[in-house]
Image (cartoon, rainbow, N blue to C red; front, side):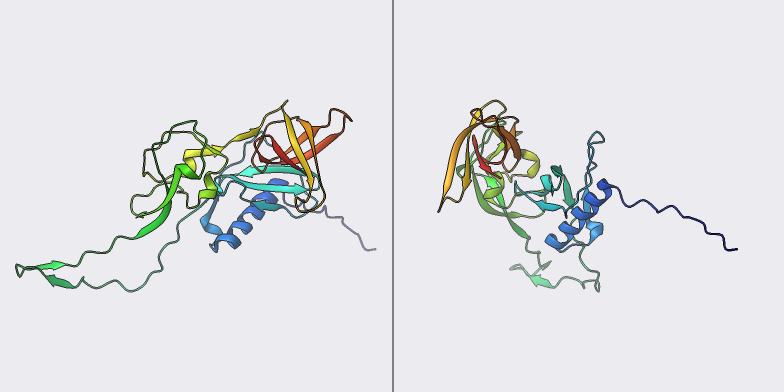
Length: 244
């Protein structure tokens, strides 16, 4: 007689492991780096990641990997994950030979100085102060020496839109992702304008009540006071949401 033994099916990866794996794969594809170069900040241990029945979607609503947004469409939820990408190491090659000497006017031999490497980054166009809301007039692009740049510096004006400073920044100093945070554009209890449809075609606008705070790009719950209906909208500006 043959005896049959039932083996318990091994559990699949946890929702948190799926999220982390998906984020790493997305960053690797977007940045063309190796998985080992992608570092994820630990999630808040109090945060419970729910299993998602659909592929996770990722984007950078604030233009920076300081806050990468991960969204699930079924069930609906979103989580922000902090990500850093290690700088690529230069490929190992033959050791460079001695620098070519040059002759000064006095006849003494000197080594040719290396040209400093520069990088185009976003700098403050004026002194900026903690709590200040930023726009394009507060910043400009400038070429600065790469040596000495610390932190994740910003490289696009779009990265400071709908953001506020969390520390003072002197004029001409490079701006870093650590210097800013997204602004709260919608506050709970406020009446906001929600638009549904295309601006070029049929569009409906109405005033509704925000049931939660929201930053740019956040999906929040809203209530139509007349009908009592609960809606979902995406924050697009100060007291402005787009219906989903």
